[in-house]
Amino acid sequence: MGIGWPQLLIIALVILVLFGRGRIADMMGDFGKGIKSFKKGMSEEESTSSKPSAQIEAQAKDATPSETTSKSDAAASPGNDSAN
Image (cartoon, rainbow, N blue to C red; front, side, top):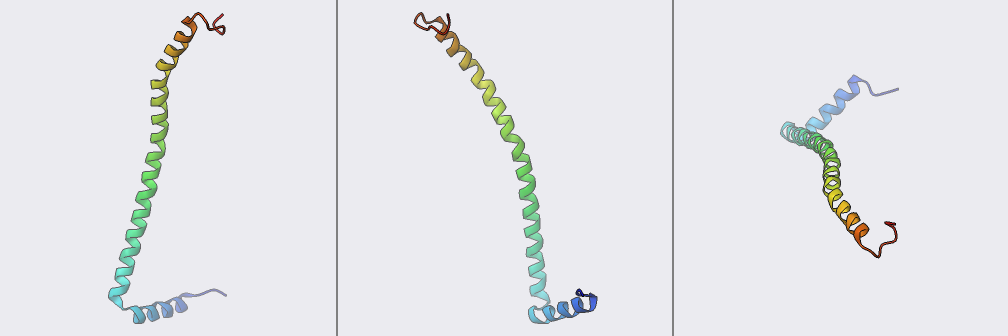
């Protein structure tokens, strides 16, 4: 046994009487704004989730030249046994 259309109609009429047409319109408007904000937040997260990988790749490209210069400096030093 579930709730049918007649029961839902009675519940809707009771809510309409308790809250009034204006208050229900305000609540539905707020509900719609909440859903819109949620969807916007989800789309922003999807777009920002791809940005960190691009930032990591950029940092890796920036780090590569400094690592190669420090390795070449270490290899050029006479006291370093790992280069032999």
